[in-house]
Length: 218
Image (cartoon, rainbow, N blue to C red; front, top):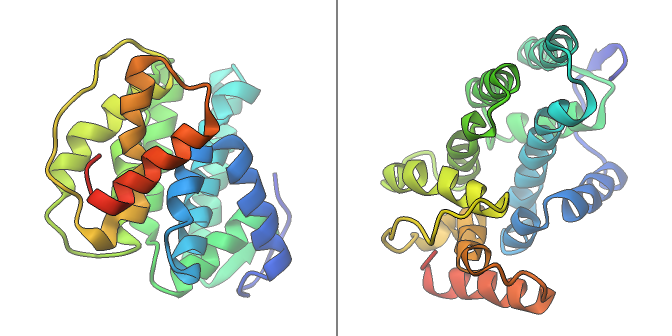
């Protein structure tokens, strides 16, 4: 999964492009929202979403609890290295390092994502995946203090279920997202499309996210 730890360095443009392209492929909804962020914050979001992807895909590459535990522990150890000022030779670890150094991501929040995904993996229950915690960490890239936490907690798991194809209906109505936070959560408006089952038109997805950015209504 990675190599030896090295002295902390900031991420190069080529590595960022590779991670950005990967998230566009595997998590297009969040990728589209991130396009509305300034470059530095956008890179922090891509680092976060790349980390999230590494954790989320454990369930797709291993099935035995022991093998899953090894992978989750590798990431815990990688975060410990970052806390000591070193980074492993892994592109996602390097991206996290950059975002942490710039103050956009924080070790405690990243550890909570590992705990959440491991709990979901062990229970074989995707409803336990830490969707709300991920959204909170994304919002924190833009504001360390805000009043939208309760809305995130109610909306994120519902949105995730709709995206998985579960027939949940539209879900909770929440107040407008404050403008600075919108690149972190504009994709939540896609629940309107997911709930209808009409997801076949890429331009519709892009327009939906644009409207979320314009109005703050998700």
